[in-house]
Length: 406
Image 1 (cartoon, rainbow, N blue to C red):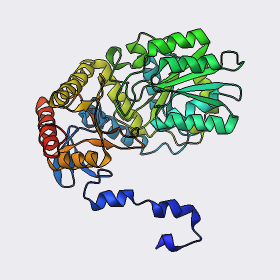
Image 2: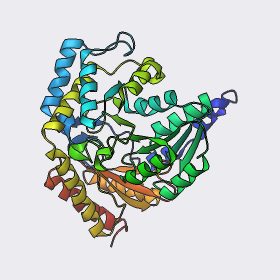
Image 3: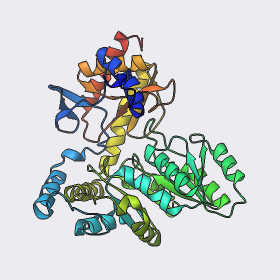
Image 4: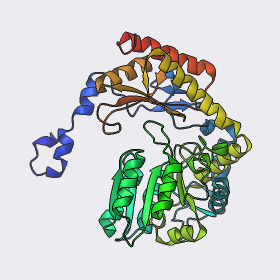
């Protein structure tokens, strides 16, 4: 076996990692289950029909006929790949069209596409900061932001100040500690936090930014299409579109595709076009991905009522779980997180729900804070009431069986 080879020291931690094997042996391993067919709210998984309550397909557009047809037509016209970076041979007219539409939708001068949402988060921050600048970042920001922070620190020596999650007093304390610096101050926050679905106090963040001469980036991966006027995100939700400097987002949730973007001032976007390694050294988003995102954005513009339906569905289940006695984290987004606390109980609840035909995500540390293992439910505009009622029924049945609720 590999762990008997003393020359492979680099892999020793791999050989020692047995937690996943233990969970598999117990029959409660919840990850990497292949979906064989998907209609959005209902999927085929492991040979059975499952109601999906764990997807980030917030508006249900991955299976929309117009979105699928747009992808097919793009492949027919452009092929399957652009075979190069945006910087060189990888730009097609669809990229420019989507950038224009996204900038207009979120109220910014310009936008720039990246090949994944992770690259968008990771590829915007480090090109903008230098040795004397400071990044002030919420501790619960997405992994792409954390990676961007580490890259800025490792490459340029940029200092990273992490403030306690959504804690405005701690944010102000951090800003006070650097009030006399010559460099720039860059506040970075998620627009909707991915584990709990909570929203930052952007109005207070903006007030502190103005007081201390800082600029703001908001990662709207879980906010775009979910909050704000017609789904325009967190800045729109707070009436701060002109105050937030940069909006970063992904295609993989509301826009039913794969990719990401940043939107802001034209001069800033132009600089990133020529200085972001994540853009310059990556193949550009594929024709099908971009065409799908354009079609999804068009549907969102034409049917803003989808946003209200999504939030109604999430709140219906949220209130139902609370009524049963589950400890549900307070939020008003598409994410409904029920705190279980114990890892094994979480896996046990997941398995019971799955056996009953409902799929949810179980988050355990490090994806969740210590002692905060949770069932992370996420809902779609395309869920029907009958789907939601079955989800609640199964939560009640399994929760009672394993002693989580009375």
